[in-house]
Image (cartoon, rainbow, N blue to C red; front, side):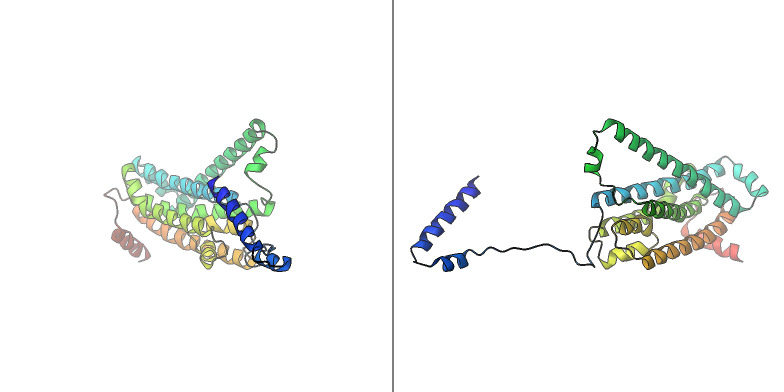
Length: 283
């Protein structure tokens, strides 16, 4: 390579000119010192785990939560279109309908995700050479505790967005209006995902700590912080507490609006109409 030739010729020329100066061996050695160094991470910056696995886990959590929650909105709008909801509201409470639908769709979605993961692992073990999967993805940090906490955040994150989608689904009467009604929630989910995803590039930053507690991003961020060994027990408890409080508030608002808007067969409700319905229900 030309660069290597230039460097070699430069070194030869420099050595030749140095010898003309009549320097001692010690002086020559001082001109070309050898530095030794060792890289170490401080305790604050110490991070465990495979960043590639963390990014994949973040993507899986986002798509699993998003698409499972989206089904709640579509299901509610379909019931309104087929007029089944008129029979349901006369035989059971709106809160039972909302929570039952949310839990049912979430359970089905969770089983689908587990089935996909199991099939993927079996296929990888059968089709790939032994040890090849471990070279691509290091799963050493996938402990039982991490699996349980990831499942917990999936459930909490799903409930957060599913209840928001239940609210938007009850405000429209036609399936073609579902996508536009769900746009604010979709934007909120994308903002939360990107906040978690990009702050993981600097996981020791204060913004990443915030993303692990902020309810719209914590389902995608906190499992990764735990996997990297950066989240303390207090942070985990605060994050779960904030997420559960958010779910309680959203559930309360969604059920109240759902119970008064579900029989509305007019045009799509605006934000002003939703606020009015919520206030009327309180009165």
